[in-house]
Image (cartoon, rainbow, N blue to C red; front, side):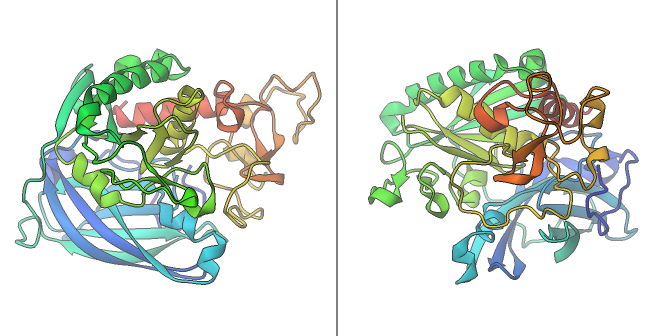
Length: 420
């Protein structure tokens, strides 16, 4: 689905020989994004060599076209594209808020790529939300033997294998990170991680793909239990600096501290991250190919976890349209959104038309004969008009089972990360 404004991204799908270009280690690239609602810029902060590469060895070029940002890696000598991947950031969301209309900010982010054997050029691209096209923000030349690449070891936290089904290159490696668990609460964290693993694999379509996952738990130690609630003047000293009231929304639980998150997984196989916060309060968040976060003990915890993981793992959009959000004009109604489970009908033919039965009207009215079947129902992406969702109810709207379009996107991402 590389049609969505990827004029700057080469739609090349040939297999790349991993062993020719890369070592089975990670090059971590920390960078800053700065700006406001009208512009953004990027700058390199640091490079790190880390000992594990958990990603696939034979799916190195991203086929999806998902995300607000893209990283491209090219061989310096030949110019050949040898790696690419899309992702989202919290800074991208912040740029759509009212606060970004009145001030400039800078946020630190991080991406991980396989460690190169030769000199490379790394290009960071950002998607223009109005046109959906990508443009280059930053290009960095990297020499893999440079003395300016940090090779120092980081803290070795307690790591426990929750589920082990095979080699990391052939599996999705999901990592649970402890947040707001004190040293006395580490046993609770590992029990919680096992419980959440059960939630995931009791949910379709993950229930049929359990053998494609490895699951790890990393026991980060916080000084205090729980998380910050800034809107209520509650502040906690925790490992990952998380908190509610992101962008002023009381239920939106996130952390902007990507560097500390990546420091925590430097020596564990990692394709996907879920931050497990030790509280019973409702809330969570998730950003594609970045992280998802949720709380351990709320009554709606199982559904929030799977919903937020849908964002971060498969690039799924929110399908609700009546809840409070901080965003303004998050989607352009004159262009097709990149997420696989919403459409503006600008290019619906590239979304889920094959799932809609012949004779079903497009758009689809909320009438009894259509409501329990795939269609094109108005409302989604935080707005009631102009954006459409695949079914009336779905995990990405109101915690119903994943609809067929979302389920297919999840299956495709599992296949991609397991090298199928």
